[in-house]
Image 1: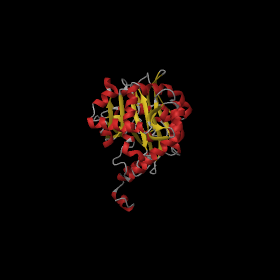
Image 2: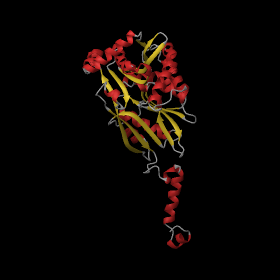
Image 3: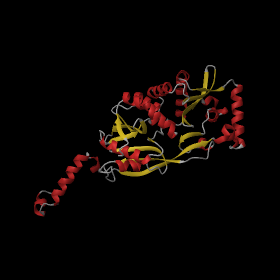
Image 4: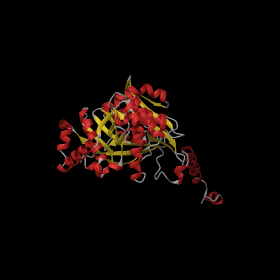
Amino acid sequence: MPDALSATVVTDLDALEKVAPGWDALAVRCRRPRSAPAFSLAWYRHALAPGAHIRVVVVTDGDEVVGVAPFYALRTTFGFYQYNLAVPILFGVEPLVSPDREQEVASAMGHALAQTKPVPDLVFVDSLPAGSLLPAHMQQGWPHPDPVLVSPHSFPWSRIELGDGGFEGFLNGRSSHFRKHFRSSYRKLVAAGFERRTWSDSDGISERVPDFRRLYEARREGRDGNGPPFDDAFAAVVVDAADRLSGTGRFRMVTIERPGEIIAAVLVVRAGGVASAWYMGFDDTWADLSPSFVSVVLCIEDAAEVGDTTFDLGAGAYNHKNRLTSDAPIFQSSLLVRRGLFPFHTPAQLLPFGARQSVGRALGRMKQLPKSVAAKAGIV
């Protein structure tokens, strides 16, 4: 590890709170809104699974935070220690490194992971741009025995570049049918007394969490239960993150509502000129006026109004996303396997690392026995 860098593994929330300002500044610099500490810290506090351990790798250069990888460690049913990135409900959290220092920072992360307890058997590194060498640099920094880097899994990440044209430029880049559909639907919603409202203060978001929960669960039910449930822990994460970012404009809820009634809501996270739609819900009673479609377009309008140049819809290439954009850069998830046996689901691999070493040494000694002795022992 370079002398200028210091890599530590932070295991408790109080210590992480002290790191949060530098961590947040790095998220803004990297333009990664989902990787901001407000969401990871809220999730660690309210939704960390029983038996899981906080393991956040923090790399500093003097007083500057230059790398953060917010993992949590969980022992699997097979006895592996698996390290996943935090906030599964926010899919898209990734290790952050200073843009010009990826190799040395990622190497320091790998070195720190190898020294922590419990030592990771499996490390999942998610949501990196395709071709990122960060997992390989983590592997290189890991002392012997080197982990094996498994071929990455790739997926599209739907994105809209707003550019200088802003919202009108976005609309003009869509088909005439798209523009007509949006304007007609929104005009009818307004005629029914609804309007777009944007909330970035803690009170405004928190007051609408019950309605958001109702709308989201209705949408999830319509998708045969796909997606994480909006349970009490999920609600607590949203309220906590809203409180942490209240007044900054970095966490927003865009709604279509009229007094006493909300029929659509979208959560949006922001950093460094990028706005990212998290979850949404809508009232199917109003489906003929397309509140889901209209609400997302209104989110794009809101992003343009506050100066964001990029709006993304998260992972996956679905029809409702393809209607909004044709730009879907490829991202990837990688896996580091510490034990290095392939396939790592073989019975031998399920043994603890030390036990497998002992068995290997014993088998080696057996091979040196005379055949007559080995036959009596039932070895050959």
